[in-house]
Length: 191
Ligand code: PRP
Image (cartoon, rainbow, N blue to C red; front, top):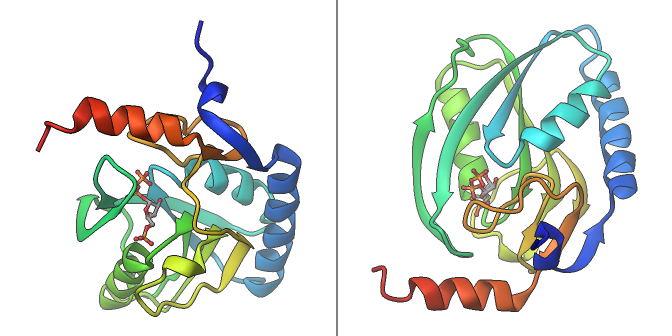
C-alpha cells in the first residue's frame, strides 16, 4: 500500500520542532493577551492542526471560530483572487481577534482577512502563523507572531496540502518534485 509519507522529499520541521514553536507562541500569547477574552479565528482548512495545538498552549479564555478564504487553485501557485467561501459565525465588533494561519506566502490572504476584521469593527486584529515565507511576499502585511521562517519551497503536512492531499502528515515536509510533475501531467488538459 502506498504511504502518504512517500510524497515527502525531506522533512523540514518535525513534530518536536512544531511542539517547541507552539509552546513558545502559546506562552507569548498568554502573556500578551493577559486579562482579555480572545476571539481566535482559524483560516480553513490549513490552519486547523496548528490552531488546535496552539490553543492548548494558550492559558486564556478564548472563543474560536473559522473562516475559509480561498486563494489557491489546485496547483502550487496562488491565483491572487480571494473569495470568502465560509464565513464566521461570530460578530467581531469590539473583539480582540487573533487570526491563525498555517503559512503566509504572498500575504494576500492574510491582508484580506485582517482588513475584513477591521472593516467589521474588531477592536484589535493580530495574527499567529506557523510558517512565514517572506521570499514570496507581494503585499505588505504585519505578521505579529510566527513559528519560523521558511524558504521558497512547496511544503506539505501539518495542515498544508498539495491538491487537497497530505494535510494529515504530522510534520512539515517538502513535496517530491515527481509528485507535482505527475499531477501536472495528469491534469495538463484540464483547462
Ligand atoms: C493557503 C494558506 C494561506 C494562504 C497563503 O491556503 O493556508 O491561507 O494559502 O497564501 P498567500 O499568502 O499567498 O495568500 P489555501 O488557500 O491553500 O487554502 P487551505 O488552507 O484550505 O489549504
